[in-house]
Image 1 (cartoon, rainbow, N blue to C red):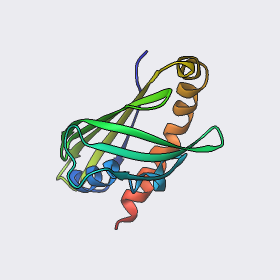
Image 2: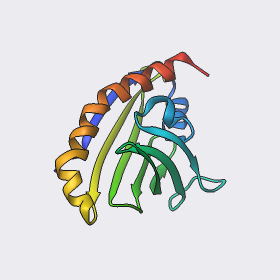
Image 3: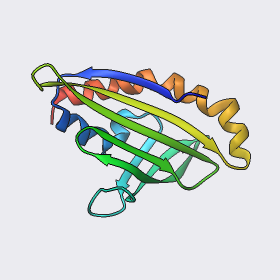
Image 4: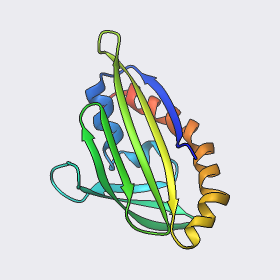
Length: 147
C-alpha cells in the first residue's frame, strides 16, 4: 500500500519550516494525538532516537523512533522501533519562489507487529488518513503565525 501523503504551502523559508516540522517538542501543537516529544540526544543525525507520547486508544503511550534520513533543510525520515504499530514518516521541504515560501510534504505509513498487523489494516491507516488534512492545516497556521 502507498504511504498516506499530504502537502501544504507555507509563508516561511524552508529552514524555518523544516526546523519546526521535525522538532518533536512542537508536534503536540499541530499533530492530533501527540501529547509531548523530545529528541533523545543533543545532536540530530541518522541513527538518533526520538521519543513521543501519543494518546492511542484512550491511553498515553510512549513511541520510540529512529531517524533514518537527515538532510536539513530538505528531507527527514524516521521509523518506529517499538510497539505493535510502527510508523514510517518522511518529511520533504521545498523552497518556493524567492525562498520566502516553502512546500511541506509529509508521508506516513505503518507496519504492524503481532496484533498491530490487524490494527493497521482495520483502524490505523484509516484514522491517519482522516487526521492528516487537519494536521496539515494546523501546521500551516502554526508556521505562519511565526515565532
